[in-house]
Image (cartoon, rainbow, N blue to C red; front, top):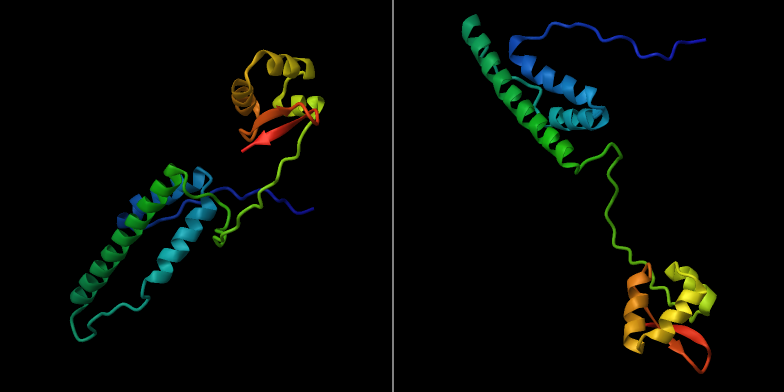
Length: 170
């Protein structure tokens, strides 16, 4: 049976200039933001031009200076990108789920049907006797306001004596 356990971390040597960036990456990884971190790094790396323009006719010192300058620029860009990723994580704007395409979808309005005492009482989370008492002790406007405050969709309800049902008030 294969061991599915994560291998222990390895110690690696990195150039001194990269130490702060590697520490930031490690911190984000420990905080569980690995997927977001990898996505951010992949996006960042893809933006860099992998070709380094070094003057081949100069001396070795000049080539090293050009390379150092180029790496410093890239390191600054990576550091800035990591700071943006950290801020995004801290503000809660990102999660580890892939982004979904935004689309406009309006849920169709549900037309509420008239309800009897038991049905409306259940919707308003009161007993049917409490509902009747409230209806009898309040004016029409007070009852509509009371029912609107108890309704999960903030719908007011009005009693209709003719059919013996409560009707939604728009």
